[in-house]
Image (cartoon, rainbow, N blue to C red; front, top):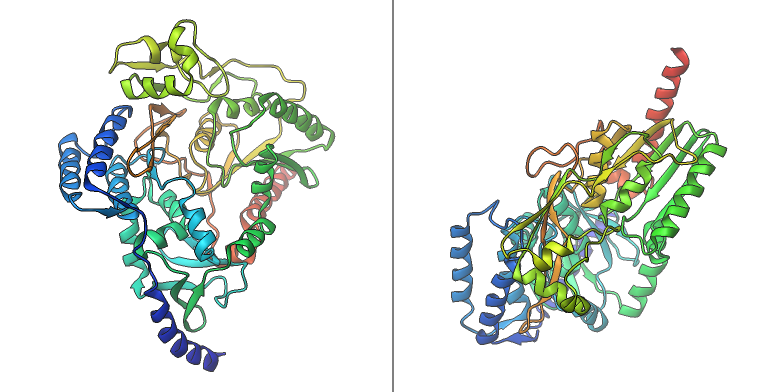
Length: 494
């Protein structure tokens, strides 16, 4: 094996360096005049944000903005301009406020150059690993990547970091490894291959050749996990009895296409939980990037007979930018701006948005109040909530309510979402570059909120190692089962 690796290193260094320079410079370009207009439009969009200058002063932000304008005096490629716009927006430090490449940009590149063959994982100590090799590459899962196209991995991370909008570093790492292929293009340009230097038992430098798109797509489809399949079905939830007396509800997203169907799922599930004689219920929101807090509240009525809040408070900024965006999406409200308040899964104070003074704030602390509702099959056993760094937005607010009202034990990692966050983003496309900008409009305070940038911390911490992640075993769930056994054993003794 080691001799093979040595020969592979020598061959692939020569071959890899020759292919790495295939990075094309033929991306679509944008002229200075259009960039200046886009930057003016960006500033207008930022007006919708409830508090953009919490983590950077307005003076410092405007200085960076003017420097960016001055630097856009020559023709740029779209990726070059993206790096600058994304860098500006990332200064706001809000994961819901972000910049995205033009629609189908990455898809078109995959069709032409193929798809990146590996799934990556960046741990919270900034160590980059190959997590999955589902396209028959030579790099073994669990290998640590120490260089990319000759650039040290830590230098690559530093180059990418300014483009990523995030509150906390762990969630930044989720974004980076989840969009690794995108950042390869943004840093290195076009190529049908990437030179990776990895360490496992030995050092391996090899060319990671992109996989032809059709084959790449088929493999990706075949390897989809349960969460992706359930979300595609429009049913981002599932219940299973996993042990004697132990049940698990997985919520993959709090964005549900059919609220009535979700309510039916909950009703049937908790009836089944009763019939299954479940004494310990696990609720899993790992990998759940959010949705609507009002959806999250529905399950809590089966777990508690007390009053609770899904959010402590929300503060929506009334801005010209948000009002214009809303009326463009819902033109019927142009001629009927009264009686438009909507209490639904997705809450927005429409009356305030359409009628209150520009620059004012609509403060809401009543709509998130949940009075006790007597459900037919309420659960009164032990409840355990599984979280990880991918639990974000409505999933982290779910965890906050769960913890705040003492509904059970939280096991896992601190959530990627924070107790105070900005959300309810509007989307605008910059006319010249066709970049998309997501801009938060509302500041949200979860139950028992405290300080900025504070995630929901577990009662019992558990972080899987890279070897556990590579194994394919759900060791966090295995750990939770052990906790449950100890808890049940303790009850028997008492």
